[in-house]
Length: 247
Ligand SMILES: Nc1ncnc2c1ncn2[C@@H]1O[C@H](COP(=O)(O)OP(=O)(O)OP(=O)(O)O)[C@@H](O)[C@H]1O
Ligand SMILES: [Mg+2]
Image (cartoon, rainbow, N blue to C red; front, side):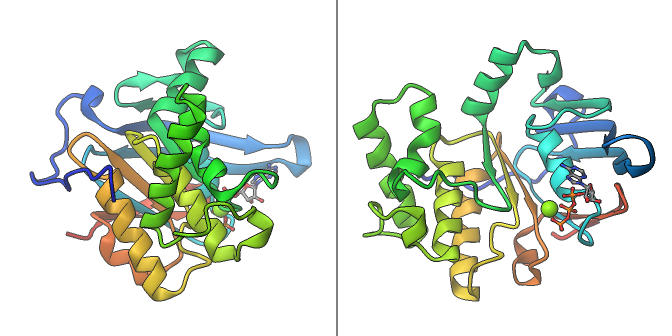
C-alpha cells in the first residue's frame, strides 16, 4: 500500500482535555418522525473515541448504530447533545465549512455502499480526492492503488453493476481511505466478505486509518473481526450499555 501510516506505537491514553479526543459525544438524542409513529433512535449517548483507537460498535438490529455513526460523522443532525471531532463542533460551522471539513477529514463506508452506478470502481474510489480538488488523473491513480490494496487490482474500470457485492464493498472501503482522513467510520465493512478477504480489509483499514492522530469506528456484527478492536461498545435500544476493553 502506498500511503502507509504507522500503526499506533504508544499506549492509548484517555485525553485530559476533551479537545484531544478524536470523537467526544455527550447526551446525543435523535428521533425519527413525530407523534405516534415517532421512533427514538438515540436516547442520550455519551461516547469518546481516542486518537489511535479502533472502536467497534455492536448491538442488535435497529438499536441505533447507523444513526449514531451518522451523527458522529456529521451526516445527520442530532436533536440534543453535542459531538466534537478533534475538538471541533461541526454543528456550529456554516454548512459549506461543515461539508468541507467532512470532505477533508472523514471517510465513511455506508452500510449499503452508496456507490455511484455510472462511475467506474476507480472513479468512485477517487471521489473524496476530486472533492478536495485533486486533478482527475492523479485522483484515479491514487484510487487504483487503494483498490489494489483491498484486492481489486484489474477491476478499476468495472462499473458497480459489474462487481459482486463484496467487491462493491471493497470499493466503498477504498473510497473511505483514499484521502487519508483523520476519522474513518464504517458501517458493517465486512458484511459481504469471506473470512480471508474480511481480514485483509481489516488489516488495510487498521494500517491506514489508525495511528497517533487518527481513529477508526466500525459498526459490525462480524465476530470474526472483533480481535481488531481496541474497545467494543455494546449498544441497545438507543444507548451504549457498556464498553469492553479488548486489548
Ligand atoms: N430515516 C428513518 N426514518 C424513520 N425511522 C428510522 C430511520 N432510520 C432509522 N430509523 C429507525 O431508527 C432506529 C435505529 O435505526 P438504525 O438504522 O440506527 O439501527 P441499526 O442499529 O443501524 O440497525 P441495523 O443493525 O439493522 O443496521 C430503528 O428503529 C429504525 O427503524
Ligand atoms: Mg445499521
